[in-house]
Image (cartoon, rainbow, N blue to C red; front, side):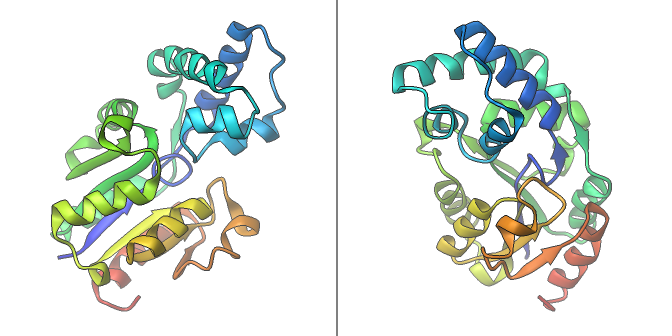
Length: 219
């Protein structure tokens, strides 16, 4: 059995439009100047509340309020302001055709992940979902992957995390699984090459070839 753990934002779906709109809505509600897009983009990847506090420099209480405003917009509108990467759905379908399993490992809220997948009709490809959920201890990706590995009983040699950020690669290494960097996402070469992933994937359309190679044990 092979186990494919997928990041969402920047790996399966280009969610930039909805996320940036949610950030703009949030800062407008807070009555604060909206940071430039270059700063807001850094908030895609880590847990959203963490991003408000540590990237956008809001104090702890304001960050909590900001997170509530963010979810208010994103859960209703922003989640659908997104575009799947070419080749993403085909990749998920291929994993299932080969008899293997797909899991989501994302710092997007668990309920938002579920809504997005269902809206795209992709929930039929997914065998398990691990999204941001403090009640479960899922405040960073390493915890999600560790839980996924424990629940599935997967061997690290048969599991891989596909993601577009250095944090995805770091989490995979800490968990002892293979790591595949999606260069077409938000991290880019500048962030991902120093992360030293096991495999680099140039475009969403290259995902299928990677899956076949991983399934054959050639990675």
